[in-house]
Length: 459
Ligand SMILES: Cc1cc2nc3c(=O)[nH]c(=O)nc-3n(C[C@H](O)[C@H](O)[C@H](O)COP(=O)(O)OP(=O)(O)OC[C@H]3O[C@@H](n4cnc5c(N)ncnc54)[C@H](O)[C@@H]3O)c2cc1C
Image (cartoon, rainbow, N blue to C red; front, side, top):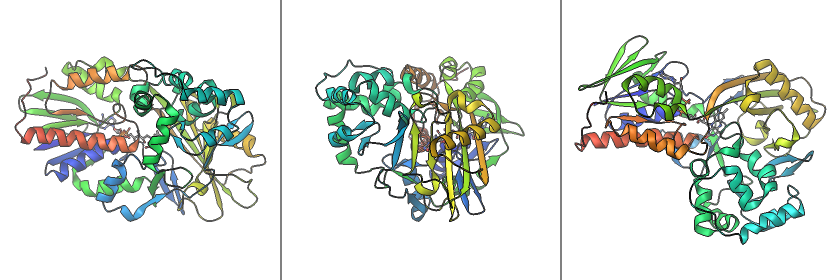
């Protein structure tokens, strides 16, 4: 059985690997850079993540794959720090309350003690304990948090914490698509605080203990490298899929240099690229694919001589919107991770998203440095700078995402040999895209080998 995967980001590589493990004849096409959004720069003792920096441990699919690939010994956790992260509100850095469940305080003690909220804001947050559950169905993330916990929890905690995950503005994210676990907490426990307490007891991962996030000694690219190794000559670099044909014999994907026949086709692409390829086939959900909004992201990583560098606390700081910084926040990479920088280097990464990320490399660098100086005071010129841009690189699951996804899945059901996987659909994090790629391939191959239904030509 021939499996063709279009796109060599982590979703595509994981899909290709799963097909290989299941004994299929696999081809993965990638035109630009293998690993997609995963971009680790390794030079002169630095391991710089200009793209994704970490995977969360409680979504097990990335680390499970890593162990399967023999990388178990290379998994690293963050350095313990208490407090681990800060939020800047009203001109001061305040520690994140301990024991957060996504963005929800799970313990009353830290909620009462935190200076992030005014006494009135805390009382309003505590109303969550007695407020009735809201109606079923989807709702904007911003209005959900304000309804349960009040405006201050939204502005000073939830919005800064989640602004970076989907890029752009978190206000209109779909609760059901982006944070289904929070809706589930309300449904099951009524109170988000009480539900979070129960969830955190089970999870036992925390930022403070260094057990929430994981990476690899050599950065996220180690996972990409291991997959590339396994795929060997199945991976074809420099090859872009330009069109797709479908006949009774199966799929034919036309690349820039040659055509590839396939029994099963996996499109592991950003949604607009998938829409372009599927439009000529009369795919019914092209409009829904194009309606998934994408926002830009960018990172600026700066290395300084640590001698005399101002004190930085924890792993980093996030900015509330009202503070007026250009960046969303800073990560102190040398303090967060082992193995990232030579000894004696202070390594600071600024993260930008939305329109701020579209200003171009020079302006990004200048803004990052100006923000850092505003935050820390006297900061010298950096010794090295890495700027990376991801134009329209982050899909946002806005209200209506579930319906869009349902329409896309309905259109796919007309085929029994096609899957669309990756960050656009069922989760944007590395663990989710890996799960997505592997599960889709497993399902299609099992369907085929168990003599699943043959669906008529889609033309
Ligand atoms: C700055 C940044 C920070 C992030 N931080 C984190 C983090 O800390 N933790 C986390 O879990 N996630 C993080 N993410 C999200 C995560 O990195 C991505 O969602 C994930 O890597 C996307 O994988 P993917 O395979 O779906 O898509 P991509 O990585 O976008 O891969 C798609 C691939 O398709 C290829 N392609 C496009 N058109 C064609 C074509 N016509 N033919 C063939 N190939 C084509 C592209 O070249 C690309 O390589 C971050 C993302 C960004 C941008």
